Image (cartoon, rainbow, N blue to C red; front, side, top):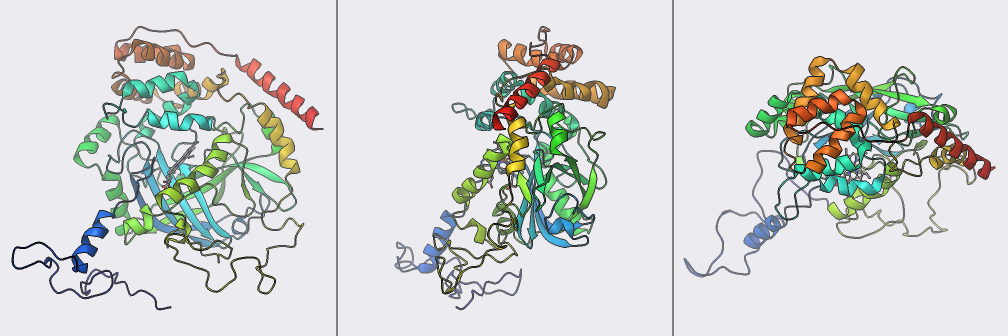
Length: 528
Ligand code: HEM
């Protein structure tokens, strides 16, 4: 089959229609006489307009505004004691990577410096298929119950009637769902306004499993720490840039890479054995919690480098499709319900946003050979030639590893289930708020931040929370801050001119831990 001769270079090209016909006058439409109506036979003109009419694809429902680049990931440390994933056992191996960094709530034209978490999505093209890291720049998240995600996101989008952003809706949701407070502490610190996309950390947030062929596994959290440190803007700088240069983040990363100042990250992993997870103070399936570094130290894994700007943003970044379910052998999801829901949601939205053959778009194609029985459909680009479209006995596809062995991704899950039933049983009521939810935010406020950071937090919150009109919404959210620390809540109340309130009441921490252990043990007895 002849391949298309598409001219990519910036100069030296001759103007043609999409069918390759050279056109000598690009602005002339064929018409009757000098000023008469246009002719239907004028393919050039119809081709031009019809394609223009279809230029837009749906923007991402979240994470619409972004910057992206290419580079590589290099394994610098042997992980073979933790996993049989081939890449992580190959020190010195480099795989090609594509990164897309984004804000979350705003539309594709919104400001890069908005106060928002940042998406941190990396596609690693490994020999065993694409491994996508669909991370954020915060180690935790707003929710632990996936059913809340659309509600929460809607409160950051536009009001159905006014078509305006609505501070009352935003804080109304948060006050009703106080497990969000840990993320709100980070979001309204200066970490909520990173200085560009290329000077921030990335975190898996979720707990994953790194597994071995013998059925053993460890729980993991991945951290990408930017070399040079996490750079932030203060509220005033971020606000000013939103107006003067809404594309500040895109520009800064593009120019850094053009100048050869490549952004680099050191990738680390935190690990926890299943036995440690059962005794850990917090539930490892709860992504509103971090694992303390002192207890679970960061272990270096590799290096991520971005050294190439895209030649075409739409093809190489906008059409990129990242999903936590694009995984590789021996790297597995846990039963975290938010992660489990995400495994479905991303490919689902890709089929809507890019079409059923989204994996065939050049940026999404794995370097690992693809052979299966998927065929045809809109915009088929790779049709797998003459290979039979069913499992034929004459030219069969082979399967990796012998049937019944633990090769590839077919592991024995019985050990995982033993532990995850213990942990998961104690995680049934995802909405219950306990004192455990306030311990880590309180540690940030009391011990991690200095006076200046505490004051910045109060002022950053006041600038947004001060727009809330409803006294009830204000009081509810102030009671959440009071549960973190009374003085924190009182300072915010004073800054926005609201009366002070008492902390919301919830189950004490010791009772929550005891309940969790008991219910886990009951589940274990039932499993036995
Ligand atoms: C983008 C859903 C939670 C990180 C998206 C998109 C959807 C989505 C539909 C658009 C994807 C596309 O159009 O290609 C959800 C749901 C969640 C959830 C349903 C929870 C139930 C999270 C969490 C993280 C995260 C916890 C990080 C730990 C990202 C990133 C992107 C994204 C980085 C942008 C990917 C890109 O650059 O293309 N999410 N999300 N999301 N999400 Fe989530």
